[in-house]
Amino acid sequence: QVHVVESGGGLVQPGGSLRLSCAASGSILSVSAISWYRQAPGKQRELVAILTSGGTTNYADSVKGRFAISGDIARKTAYLQMNSLKSEDTAVYYCNVRARADGFSYWGQGSQVTVSS
Image (cartoon, rainbow, N blue to C red; front, side):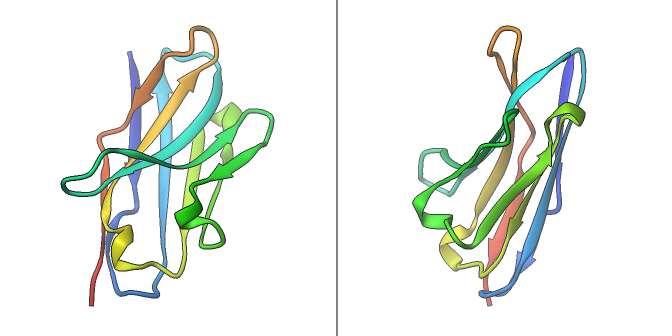
C-alpha cells in the first residue's frame, strides 16, 4: 500500500506565497517522477510542474517564473513553492508520484489553495 500526503495549502492574498509539501510512503521502492497537478471548480485537472529522477523540471506556461518544484526523489518528497499568487491559481492541488517499476501513479488526497483578498 502506498500513501501520498500533501500539506501546506490555505488562504492567501493575491501576490502572496505558499509552499506545498508532498511525501510518499509505503510499498513503493523507487520513484521516477513527482508531479503537482491542480483542479479548479468546473475545470479539468491540469499538470502544474514535474520533477524527474534525473533532476529535470518542467512547468505549465501559466506558472513559469512564479512556481518552483524541488525535492528529493530518492526520499520520495517534493515541494512546490508558489509565489506571486493570482486568483486564477485557486484550486485543489494534488501530488502525483510515479513508480519506476511499472509506471503506476499514486495520488494524494489534495490540498486546497485559495487566493483571495
